[in-house]
Length: 205
Image (cartoon, rainbow, N blue to C red; front, side):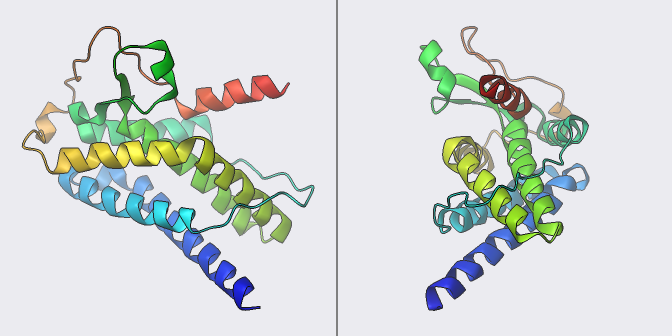
């Protein structure tokens, strides 16, 4: 009984942080750049902790989790963050699946990473709002599987990039917003989460 109570508490705290993160991301366009970076670091840290505390769950129902975030909404979120961060949006990482095709770090985007997380969490929260426990459980399973497979890595990559940005002397002013980051020619920009989802769907056919 106590174990069940703890699990419910952990799930509720995860839902709370996920909801706060989504609201924060939806209001990114109205944020100041440095404030956004500081708050994003706090939200990402809390989100990783609350997700990691949840146990691995297995689907015991036939309910299929609903998807609600459209490509238009995804792109609106991604673009607003990209414009806010400007040239500081791009970063290089070796922790990316595309590294197997390259001998140089891969160019990634903080905006894409944060938008990917937003999509996963907003879809899960939508299932919670429907009030059907089977859908909530199915949505949680989908969300946690995504955490283990891809968005947990993206969260950590973005967190590391934001931390480095906040504590460096190279944090650019907003007037540099349209200048791109120059990266080695061999580096490749990662696919968006929507493209990743489309590839996964094709494999399932």
